[in-house]
Length: 346
Image 1 (cartoon, one colour):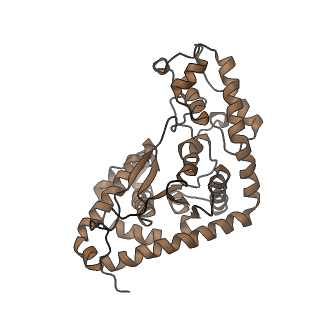
Image 2 (tube, helix red, strand yellow):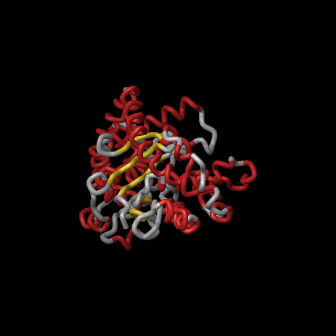
Image 3 (cartoon, one colour):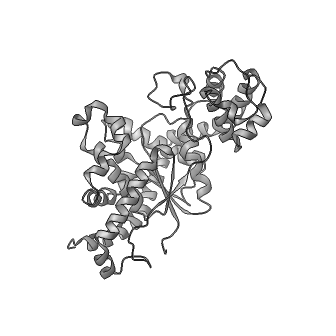
């Protein structure tokens, strides 16, 4: 295959980024800069599938961009931009709307979860947004996408759309000489599966995913929390009365314990087994302060840098504009071929 190794990932600007966003996605973006071309997008077009206040959307968009940079994403090495500045995302999404099948969209579990019993009244955008997600990825012919468990189904749909487009337009791709050495125009994107502890759970209930929608602020560590708030939230996190086990099997049926050990493992770049080798048999009175110290050391400096960047909106906006210009150059090159392949007269 002749596709350039390229990573694409996007995060919605839904406000109040938390530890789960960091460990599940943003933290993983930095080392990928060493091995791939990297494109990181604030997907603000996805955000408006549900009603957004315009000022809140702008603020949240800048917050996500600030998190990328504060975490170590270099906007000169990576392309960092917000989706709405590159209109080719919407253009390719429409083409994919005409390639994808209704049944494919209807099977998306995230749509079912978000729509609930009110599916007749949600926006068309919420139903079709996996097609836009596929366009986000394939517009740049991304070969890899870092994904967690909750995004695997969408990447599978992206792969299905790429395969169907390549098959539907096989002759046109060949006539345009637009494919790779195997005749494919779009790559069949591969997942970069998340490592340990990427699914971070609530600090109040280890059976629920950490979420900004939880009414309790104590359930999550915000990426804008200062050192004092981080330490207090960890020390107040729900636990059970038993000591930490000596092996991973001992975490079964102990969701809060499993979550806190997983957070420690992720922040320290260790496995859960290695964490338990150090802390097994000890009580929470020793483990929680150690976890709090580790989290403060890792997260508090980033929170400070995020706040500085958010206060400097001109710099953030300039980074996003520069990234969008670089992204548009790649995107338009793709769309020139797509327009010709599908038969549009230009």
